[in-house]
Length: 168
Ligand code: SME
Image (cartoon, rainbow, N blue to C red; front, side, top):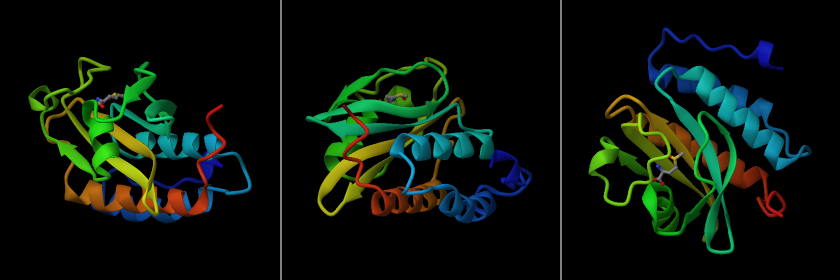
């Protein structure tokens, strides 16, 4: 499957998102386990954008966020709701863009090299299912273009999967 992905990395971020969105739509398969699908989404995003140092999912269960499929360095495995950028995004149910993580009070530094971050909540109805978290070694790596397309990817995942059975 991977060899069929087509990503022209010389294009702008917006053009890259336009290329990968239909590929993500055809890559994800609701008949296969959620863990397999989320793993491939992280691999595709990490492959598509050189600016990403870490990309992964945290999945909501019992008032906490638990580390899910990711690409990058070892990360903290549990985040309390309201803690860090991830917990804040999950509790507010809104996307948070952080241009400089060192200025975000409560930021959880899993990789000391990370300088900026975006976290997108995955929401179904009124329920929080998890978050998609992307880090970069660049400052101000993420903007409204990332927010727009990553929210579309998270909506797609929320529509296709229940997110109930991945955490035991
Ligand atoms: N920085 C995140 C924690 C997760 S790591 O970036 C992978 C936060 O503050 O919630």
